[in-house]
Amino acid sequence: MPELPEVEVTRRALAPVVEGRIVSSLIVREPRLRWPIAPRLAATVTGQQVRSLGRRGKYLLWELERGTMVSHLGMSGSWRVHRQDAAPAPGPHDHVDVVVGEHILRLTDPRRFGALFWHGAARGSIERHPRLAKLGIEPFDPRFDASFLHHALRGRRAPIKQVLLAGDVVVGVGNIYASESLFRARIHPTTPALRLSRLRCERLVQAVREVLAAAIELGGSSLRDYVGTDGAEGEFIGNAKVYGRAGEPCVVCGRKIKRIVQGQRATYYCPNCQRR
DNA sequence: AGCTGGTCCTGATGGC
DNA sequence: TGCCATCAGGACCAGC
Picture 1 (cartoon, protein in one colour):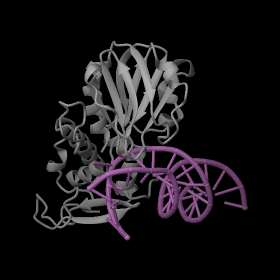
Picture 2 (cartoon, rainbow, N blue to C red):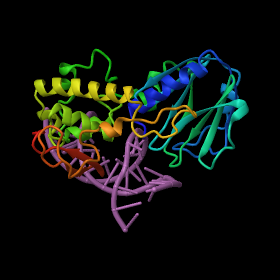
Picture 3 (cartoon, rainbow, N blue to C red):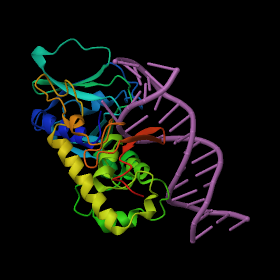
Picture 4 (cartoon, rainbow, N blue to C red):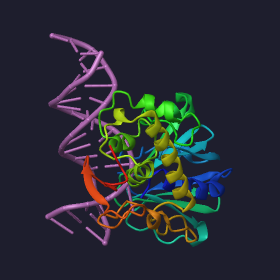
Protein backbone atom coordinates (compact mmCIF):
# COMPACT_ATOMS: atom_id res chain seq x y z
CA MET A 1 0.00 0.00 0.00
CA PRO A 2 2.07 2.78 1.24
CA GLU A 3 4.12 4.96 -1.00
CA LEU A 4 4.46 8.65 -0.29
CA PRO A 5 0.89 9.56 -1.22
CA GLU A 6 -0.57 7.00 1.15
CA VAL A 7 1.64 8.20 3.97
CA GLU A 8 0.71 11.81 3.24
CA VAL A 9 -2.99 10.95 3.15
CA THR A 10 -2.53 9.22 6.48
CA ARG A 11 -0.68 12.19 7.93
CA ARG A 12 -3.42 14.59 6.92
CA ALA A 13 -6.08 12.35 8.38
CA LEU A 14 -4.30 11.75 11.68
CA ALA A 15 -2.95 15.23 12.28
CA PRO A 16 -6.22 16.85 13.46
CA VAL A 17 -6.85 13.89 15.75
CA VAL A 18 -3.49 13.93 17.50
CA GLU A 19 -1.98 17.41 17.30
CA GLY A 20 -2.03 19.18 20.65
CA ARG A 21 -3.20 16.05 22.48
CA ILE A 22 -1.44 14.01 25.11
CA VAL A 23 -0.37 10.42 24.56
CA SER A 24 -2.09 8.68 27.45
CA SER A 25 -0.77 5.24 26.63
CA LEU A 26 0.85 3.08 24.02
CA ILE A 27 0.00 -0.58 23.90
CA VAL A 28 2.23 -3.01 22.02
CA ARG A 29 0.68 -6.40 21.36
CA GLU A 30 3.26 -7.58 18.84
CA PRO A 31 6.70 -5.97 18.96
CA ARG A 32 8.15 -8.04 16.10
CA LEU A 33 7.92 -5.59 13.24
CA ARG A 34 10.81 -4.98 10.86
CA TRP A 35 12.84 -4.20 13.93
CA PRO A 36 11.55 -5.05 17.39
CA ILE A 37 9.70 -2.20 19.04
CA ALA A 38 11.79 -1.11 22.00
CA PRO A 39 10.24 -2.23 25.28
CA ARG A 40 10.66 1.23 26.74
CA LEU A 41 8.91 3.08 23.91
CA ALA A 42 5.60 3.08 25.77
CA ALA A 43 7.10 4.58 28.90
CA THR A 44 8.99 7.12 26.83
CA VAL A 45 6.06 8.56 24.92
CA THR A 46 3.36 8.31 27.58
CA GLY A 47 2.42 11.72 28.94
CA GLN A 48 3.97 13.69 26.13
CA GLN A 49 2.04 16.11 24.00
CA VAL A 50 1.97 15.62 20.25
CA ARG A 51 3.24 18.91 18.89
CA SER A 52 2.71 18.03 15.23
CA LEU A 53 2.60 15.18 12.79
CA GLY A 54 5.16 15.39 10.01
CA ARG A 55 6.44 13.25 7.19
CA ARG A 56 9.82 12.51 5.65
CA GLY A 57 9.65 10.27 2.62
CA LYS A 58 7.46 7.38 3.69
CA TYR A 59 8.19 7.91 7.38
CA LEU A 60 5.56 9.47 9.60
CA LEU A 61 7.08 11.74 12.24
CA TRP A 62 5.27 12.16 15.52
CA GLU A 63 6.86 15.28 16.96
CA LEU A 64 6.53 15.01 20.74
CA GLU A 65 7.93 17.25 23.44
CA ARG A 66 11.16 15.38 23.98
CA GLY A 67 11.77 13.82 20.60
CA THR A 68 10.20 12.11 17.62
CA MET A 69 8.31 8.86 17.39
CA VAL A 70 8.76 7.50 13.87
CA SER A 71 6.43 5.08 12.17
CA HIS A 72 6.70 3.35 8.81
CA LEU A 73 3.98 1.33 7.11
CA GLY A 74 6.22 -1.06 5.21
CA MET A 75 4.33 -2.98 2.52
CA SER A 76 1.04 -3.62 4.22
CA GLY A 77 0.64 -1.25 7.15
CA SER A 78 -2.06 1.27 7.93
CA TRP A 79 -3.20 3.44 10.81
CA ARG A 80 -6.87 3.38 11.74
CA VAL A 81 -8.67 5.71 14.05
CA HIS A 82 -11.30 4.71 16.56
CA ARG A 83 -13.06 6.64 19.29
CA GLN A 84 -11.90 5.25 22.58
CA ASP A 85 -15.40 4.29 23.63
CA ALA A 86 -16.16 2.58 20.32
CA ALA A 87 -13.01 0.71 19.43
CA PRO A 88 -13.53 -2.82 18.15
CA ALA A 89 -11.58 -5.68 19.67
CA PRO A 90 -8.10 -5.74 18.15
CA GLY A 91 -7.53 -8.27 15.39
CA PRO A 92 -4.50 -10.52 14.89
CA HIS A 93 -2.55 -7.89 12.93
CA ASP A 94 -3.38 -4.92 15.14
CA HIS A 95 0.08 -4.66 16.65
CA VAL A 96 -0.01 -1.27 18.38
CA ASP A 97 -2.55 1.12 19.87
CA VAL A 98 -1.61 4.71 20.56
CA VAL A 99 -4.19 6.25 22.87
CA VAL A 100 -4.28 9.97 22.26
CA GLY A 101 -6.98 12.26 23.61
CA GLU A 102 -10.32 10.62 22.90
CA HIS A 103 -9.01 8.35 20.19
CA ILE A 104 -7.16 5.13 19.68
CA LEU A 105 -4.81 5.05 16.71
CA ARG A 106 -4.29 1.45 15.75
CA LEU A 107 -1.35 0.22 13.68
CA THR A 108 -2.33 -2.74 11.55
CA ASP A 109 0.30 -4.52 9.49
CA PRO A 110 -0.16 -8.13 8.36
CA ARG A 111 3.27 -8.53 6.79
CA ARG A 112 5.05 -6.76 9.64
CA PHE A 113 7.49 -4.89 7.42
CA GLY A 114 6.52 -1.69 9.21
CA ALA A 115 8.41 0.00 12.01
CA LEU A 116 7.96 2.11 15.10
CA PHE A 117 10.87 3.73 16.91
CA TRP A 118 11.92 6.66 19.04
CA HIS A 119 14.50 9.36 18.40
CA GLY A 120 15.19 11.52 21.46
CA ALA A 121 15.70 15.24 20.86
CA ALA A 122 19.00 15.02 22.71
CA ARG A 123 20.43 13.04 19.80
CA GLY A 124 19.88 15.95 17.45
CA SER A 125 17.68 16.42 14.43
CA ILE A 126 15.62 13.47 13.28
CA GLU A 127 17.14 14.09 9.86
CA ARG A 128 20.37 12.64 11.23
CA HIS A 129 18.87 9.40 12.39
CA PRO A 130 20.62 6.56 10.50
CA ARG A 131 17.34 5.37 8.99
CA LEU A 132 16.60 8.80 7.55
CA ALA A 133 20.05 10.26 6.97
CA LYS A 134 20.55 8.86 3.48
CA LEU A 135 17.12 9.71 2.15
CA GLY A 136 16.90 11.69 -1.06
CA ILE A 137 15.22 15.04 -1.52
CA GLU A 138 11.48 15.49 -1.00
CA PRO A 139 9.73 15.53 -4.38
CA PHE A 140 7.85 18.74 -3.56
CA ASP A 141 10.98 20.53 -2.36
CA PRO A 142 11.54 23.41 -4.79
CA ARG A 143 15.21 22.42 -4.97
CA PHE A 144 14.16 19.21 -6.72
CA ASP A 145 14.55 20.39 -10.30
CA ALA A 146 16.12 19.28 -13.56
CA SER A 147 19.61 20.36 -12.57
CA PHE A 148 19.40 18.62 -9.24
CA LEU A 149 18.20 15.39 -10.80
CA HIS A 150 20.64 15.48 -13.68
CA HIS A 151 23.46 15.96 -11.23
CA ALA A 152 22.24 13.28 -8.86
CA LEU A 153 22.11 10.70 -11.66
CA ARG A 154 25.78 11.08 -12.51
CA GLY A 155 27.53 7.77 -11.98
CA ARG A 156 24.27 5.83 -11.72
CA ARG A 157 24.36 3.16 -14.39
CA ALA A 158 21.37 1.27 -13.04
CA PRO A 159 18.03 1.54 -14.83
CA ILE A 160 16.17 4.74 -14.01
CA LYS A 161 13.24 2.78 -12.59
CA GLN A 162 15.47 1.19 -9.98
CA VAL A 163 17.21 4.43 -9.14
CA LEU A 164 13.84 6.09 -8.54
CA LEU A 165 12.85 3.19 -6.31
CA ALA A 166 16.07 3.29 -4.32
CA GLY A 167 14.98 6.53 -2.65
CA ASP A 168 18.44 8.01 -2.22
CA VAL A 169 17.92 10.53 -5.02
CA VAL A 170 14.29 11.46 -4.44
CA VAL A 171 12.05 9.90 -1.79
CA GLY A 172 8.54 8.59 -1.90
CA VAL A 173 8.40 7.06 -5.36
CA GLY A 174 7.49 3.43 -4.82
CA ASN A 175 6.79 0.70 -7.31
CA ILE A 176 3.42 1.92 -8.56
CA TYR A 177 4.33 5.56 -8.93
CA ALA A 178 7.74 4.82 -10.48
CA SER A 179 6.02 3.17 -13.44
CA GLU A 180 3.42 5.92 -13.62
CA SER A 181 5.99 8.72 -13.44
CA LEU A 182 8.15 7.23 -16.17
CA PHE A 183 5.13 6.79 -18.42
CA ARG A 184 4.15 10.40 -17.91
CA ALA A 185 7.73 11.50 -18.64
CA ARG A 186 7.86 9.21 -21.71
CA ILE A 187 11.05 7.57 -20.46
CA HIS A 188 11.75 3.85 -20.89
CA PRO A 189 12.19 2.22 -17.47
CA THR A 190 15.38 0.37 -18.42
CA THR A 191 17.24 3.51 -19.50
CA PRO A 192 20.52 3.81 -17.59
CA ALA A 193 19.92 6.71 -15.23
CA LEU A 194 23.08 8.57 -16.23
CA ARG A 195 21.95 8.62 -19.85
CA LEU A 196 18.97 10.90 -19.14
CA SER A 197 19.38 14.29 -20.77
CA ARG A 198 18.64 17.42 -18.84
CA LEU A 199 15.43 17.84 -20.81
CA ARG A 200 14.28 14.37 -19.83
CA CYS A 201 15.25 15.08 -16.22
CA GLU A 202 13.01 18.14 -16.42
CA ARG A 203 10.14 16.01 -17.67
CA LEU A 204 10.74 13.41 -14.98
CA VAL A 205 10.76 15.97 -12.17
CA GLN A 206 7.44 17.33 -13.36
CA ALA A 207 6.01 13.85 -13.88
CA VAL A 208 6.95 12.67 -10.38
CA ARG A 209 5.37 15.72 -8.83
CA GLU A 210 2.20 15.48 -10.90
CA VAL A 211 1.73 11.77 -10.32
CA LEU A 212 2.29 12.03 -6.56
CA ALA A 213 0.08 15.11 -6.25
CA ALA A 214 -2.72 13.42 -8.19
CA ALA A 215 -2.42 10.32 -6.02
CA ILE A 216 -2.65 12.38 -2.84
CA GLU A 217 -5.75 14.11 -4.19
CA LEU A 218 -7.34 10.76 -4.92
CA GLY A 219 -6.55 9.42 -1.47
CA GLY A 220 -3.75 7.09 -2.52
CA SER A 221 -3.96 3.65 -4.03
CA SER A 222 -6.39 0.96 -2.90
CA LEU A 223 -6.51 1.84 0.75
CA ARG A 224 -9.60 0.04 1.84
CA ASP A 225 -10.85 0.87 5.37
CA TYR A 226 -7.92 3.10 5.58
CA VAL A 227 -8.27 5.68 8.30
CA GLY A 228 -11.17 5.09 10.60
CA THR A 229 -14.67 4.16 9.62
CA ASP A 230 -15.07 7.30 7.54
CA GLY A 231 -11.68 6.84 5.88
CA ALA A 232 -11.70 7.16 2.13
CA GLU A 233 -10.76 4.31 -0.09
CA GLY A 234 -7.97 5.31 -2.44
CA GLU A 235 -8.98 5.93 -6.01
CA PHE A 236 -5.61 6.18 -7.67
CA ILE A 237 -5.36 2.63 -8.95
CA GLY A 238 -8.40 3.17 -11.13
CA ASN A 239 -6.55 6.11 -12.65
CA ALA A 240 -3.28 4.34 -13.26
CA LYS A 241 -2.16 4.66 -16.87
CA VAL A 242 0.18 1.66 -16.94
CA TYR A 243 0.45 0.00 -13.51
CA GLY A 244 -1.31 -3.34 -13.51
CA ARG A 245 -2.46 -2.86 -17.11
CA ALA A 246 -0.24 -5.36 -18.96
CA GLY A 247 -1.80 -6.31 -22.28
CA GLU A 248 -4.29 -3.45 -22.22
CA PRO A 249 -4.06 -0.57 -24.69
CA CYS A 250 -2.01 2.50 -23.90
CA VAL A 251 -4.32 5.41 -23.15
CA VAL A 252 -2.19 7.61 -25.41
CA CYS A 253 -1.30 5.49 -28.45
CA GLY A 254 -3.26 2.26 -28.13
CA ARG A 255 -0.25 -0.07 -28.13
CA LYS A 256 -0.26 -2.91 -25.62
CA ILE A 257 1.20 -2.08 -22.22
CA LYS A 258 4.13 -4.34 -21.34
CA ARG A 259 5.15 -5.86 -18.03
CA ILE A 260 8.77 -6.62 -17.22
CA VAL A 261 10.59 -7.45 -14.00
CA GLN A 262 13.37 -5.23 -12.69
CA GLY A 263 15.05 -6.08 -9.41
CA GLN A 264 12.30 -8.62 -8.67
CA ARG A 265 9.62 -5.94 -8.98
CA ALA A 266 7.10 -5.55 -11.75
CA THR A 267 7.45 -2.60 -14.10
CA TYR A 268 4.76 -1.53 -16.57
CA TYR A 269 5.33 0.70 -19.56
CA CYS A 270 4.25 1.55 -23.09
CA PRO A 271 6.88 0.34 -25.56
CA ASN A 272 5.80 3.00 -28.05
CA CYS A 273 5.45 6.11 -25.87
CA GLN A 274 8.47 5.42 -23.66
CA ARG A 275 11.90 5.45 -25.26
CA ARG A 276 15.43 4.88 -24.05
C1' DA B 1 2.62 -21.52 -6.84
C1' DG B 2 3.39 -17.11 -7.60
C1' DC B 3 2.21 -12.68 -7.04
C1' DT B 4 1.95 -8.23 -3.86
C1' DG B 5 2.59 -1.23 -2.28
C1' DG B 6 9.45 -1.25 1.22
C1' DT B 7 13.81 -1.37 2.91
C1' DC B 8 18.15 -3.28 4.79
C1' DC B 9 22.11 -6.19 4.51
C1' DT B 10 25.68 -8.70 2.23
C1' DG B 11 28.99 -9.58 -1.08
C1' DA B 12 30.31 -8.55 -5.85
C1' DT B 13 31.54 -5.23 -9.35
C1' DG B 14 33.69 -1.72 -11.67
C1' DG B 15 35.18 3.26 -12.37
C1' DC B 16 38.50 6.44 -10.96
C1' DT C 1 46.47 -1.56 -7.33
C1' DG C 2 43.19 -0.08 -3.97
C1' DC C 3 39.38 2.50 -2.52
C1' DC C 4 34.74 3.21 -2.36
C1' DA C 5 30.26 4.10 -4.40
C1' DT C 6 27.12 1.42 -6.65
C1' DC C 7 24.65 -2.70 -7.76
C1' DA C 8 22.23 -7.33 -7.54
C1' DG C 9 20.16 -10.53 -4.84
C1' DG C 10 18.24 -12.34 -0.81
C1' DA C 11 15.82 -11.62 3.42
C1' DC C 12 11.95 -10.34 6.23
C1' DC C 13 6.23 -11.65 6.41
C1' DA C 14 1.12 -12.79 5.36
C1' DG C 15 -2.75 -12.94 2.19
C1' DC C 16 -4.86 -13.53 -2.08
